[in-house]
Image (cartoon, rainbow, N blue to C red):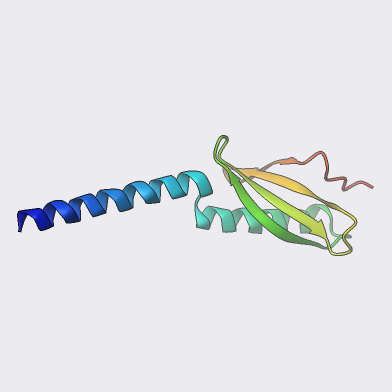
Amino acid sequence: MKAKAIFLSIIGIVLLLSGFIHFFLNGSPVTKENSGELVSTYLKENYPEESFKITNISYYPGEGTYIVHVISKDGKIEGNIDVKNGRIRTEGAEFPFWQ
């Protein structure tokens, strides 16, 4: 009985550590989804003449930043928008909205 309790404790600790590492490296799925919605709203408000789609949302753990990759529907405009703490930080330098 004691061995079973120790085994279950070890399994629980391993699961908690692996969950922590996963969230540290990949970010929260809820925050990732919210970042995508924030960027979508931002693009509709600031660039209503263009139509964009989000192709990828990745997480940079060093700064706690979500990097949202967007591309215009015609494929001419493409780039990244950084989101940190629920706010747009930057439009990537390779994202020439004004061209």
